[in-house]
Length: 405
Image (cartoon, rainbow, N blue to C red; front, side):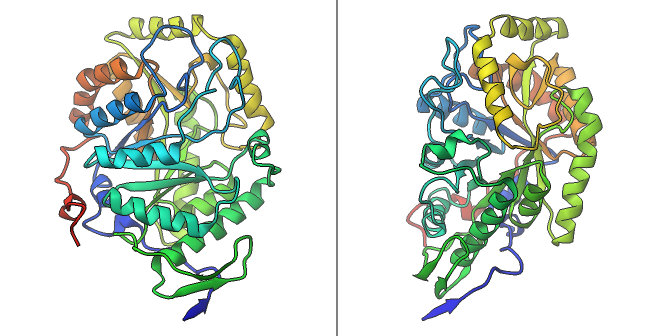
């Protein structure tokens, strides 16, 4: 038996609406805490200053396990398609990278509590909603409700060219993403075969089982444009944002409140609540002077050709999130810089929270040792400041063994 569907009038319930879901547990935290994994060579910083940071799976697995031990809420990996040489320079910045969809999903069997967010360019190549609905439901069961997808449409012209495609116009990309996400929702919720003639993706007698445990997997997107926000407030649980004005904290606290307010207003109009999370690069030492010296040493060792190559890549794209940003200390990378002593880092988090941001997705220069310093010196202060609460027990549903019914 088949049913013909138009686009649904409203998206599926969020897994956060289910009391027993891993996402609902995470959303009890006053301030979300995530780790942006360095699954690409060079991480976020094209610098030659020595460090341990590595794109390898074993390194990222160790980071994820440590983040889970520390009570982090989620880990996340970006997706990119770089040509030979990456973004240039002696480091061949980001030439090598793991695939985010595969790598982040592979962490499911090695973790128990932390949320795992994969990124996927849904418009590159022959991706179809039936593919992702089946793969996503499977990963949802493997991760017991902890897996999610950051669906991106791609802003760079050279990436779709790898697939023999041309870049789709900005707002049309989000129209296509709306259709794609809506078809996923239909496939995850329908107990009958689905037949649709389009637009963009057709299907005949399509059916997906098993169904996700909590309605659907966790949905994420990153955008600063009006079209991206319209999409995000309908379909996403979490939206990654950037500071519209610049990558320094003083710029962010001025520009972010209006940006977040616009997202919340748009979400409320859809009868939804969406959490926002921002991506700061943390350069922390015991004193402010030491932290600034650390930043300056990273910058002094900049791979300048790679810095310029990456900047040119951004200029050639049509992403709107950082179009009007004031970019200082460009070699440091990342969307926002927090530099200072532990107390200053927490003060920065408090300012971001007061600006309306619901959490942070952290990057570091030297990930493993910098994460340990953060754990020892910053994390306790976050608890003292009320930004974090002792972790509530993992829901019984997410602890069930793989052979449970």
